[in-house]
Image (tube, rainbow, N blue to C red; front, top):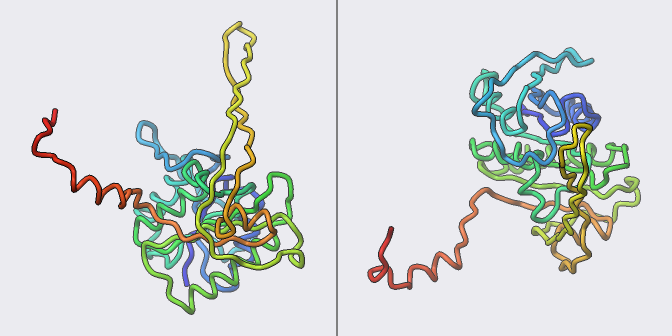
Length: 257
């Protein structure tokens, strides 16, 4: 198996290093990741500026890598379209420092990098450690390796994506693995007003999560109960129930401007 490894925390982040340490024994690894921190960039791509690409040297001579001067989606897109001579079998994005749960996946550079792989017809995994403070990526890396082995055995379909979140506890404290759907997280968006040395006003956003009730089949609930959550997601945002309703509307009497 050949894996394209990426992230949104930057190519020097400890999470991506933990991943290639865990996966290099089960697959051929190629790394293409942002040169700098790109968290919360969503699926943005660079269209008005050049994208600088430099080779990156790792301690392991068996792993090649590129440092991409762009977003996570840029990194995957340019790797697949230009840098790689052989198409990978799997795209793995992570390990992210911090959770990627519920509707936060829409903001996540980690998930968006995996989505970019899935959009190219390549199965993908986005994996996150649900803590901004804990630096032990070992349990998440070990789980990802076991998941990749299952994907090799089960032949995960093209265009598919698994979003994985690992609770920030020791490996022997993880309760289990739950197959989940996306939950719901709400924030109180607090904008702190500040003034720069030139007297100009600017704002610093610091959203505070609000306690919400999440059913037992959601990713949020799984993490709260110290389970690993595995959520299959896709990039088709069509609202199918509303689509069916719209077909019954009287469009002949509507003037389309």
